[in-house]
View: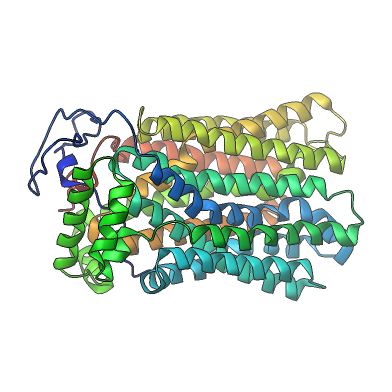
Length: 505
């Protein structure tokens, strides 16, 4: 269990009491000249500052660069696998395991990330994740067989688990309320940039001799780790961690740089100190609330269901096996398959920009509903195509429609459900359960992504490719129903309001 404390603090003067039946409101921020409001006071109609502070964006991008490495290490197997089979004679089952096991191994890093970050600090934990990526990439690049490849995936998986937890934690702790949704989407888009870069690497090195091509693909992931680790050390430490360590002066200096106004910085520091004065909520205390309060159990169930359905709808099957899917649709050229994989990466990363731009404007719920509806429709089209034209070769029309449907699925996922399930989960977890809940949320996501990728080949061999897509479509449809019936809108609400919205106070 990750035993880290709450990771997001919002100025109490942003607090606007909302009920679940009222429409979401725009966030209110103190004006530059506004007096500091007393804790717990309410203020409506405050004019937002004319300029947004961009320093948190700089820190967010630096902290989230480790997400690029996570995406690269996950995605590089997509194209490398066809060369590894030819060079090392790996079986379909071995490829299946190597593709998905990094997600399972990431649970180790995810479960250690909270403990490590509370002791070493957020910055050094990000540096540590880069070290794991460096060792894992080099181990896979020099591997002579399946056992060493598995060892390399294990080490890289630990780095992936650290990256999944620590980047969002750091971002949440420095982000002002006005741009929380936008900034918390950046780690997700950089994961997808890493995926896209891995596809570019697959294509760029595919012309090398077979015994070198896949090794260089893995080795390329080691190159940026040292530079990224050095860059992370130039950003400030988390103000929450500094205050935990008895360094309020340094925490205030960071808050001055990362808040929209001096008043907001002062209020954020007061709230941190108030929480620390009350003592750290232990893991046992948090889980006692889960055992005794139905409302807290309901929130935890919402978070876990969101993450379960996100991965059960099959997105990582496309990430890892896109070329194999297109090959089944009739495309046989390796270079064309790897080139189209880049298209998937561009579409996936680009679509998240839309989610980032709209998350704080139209709301999380609407975007996720549109997203899951599009996912369901595109998966049904794919299933129908493979059912009607199974075994078709050199049928340009079938291949073109299959490609379009796969792209539609990727875009639909990334424009809403992909990034916003993380944002929504982080927002609604109550303060005293946020650390442990985030750990469970990450664990559920990684476990399901591992299961999906480690069973895809066996699944379509057992129930056909059409059957696999129909199964994923059912999961996407279930996600739509769940979001529509169980998830209220959270846009414009402070983190304190979430506890009233879900009745967890």
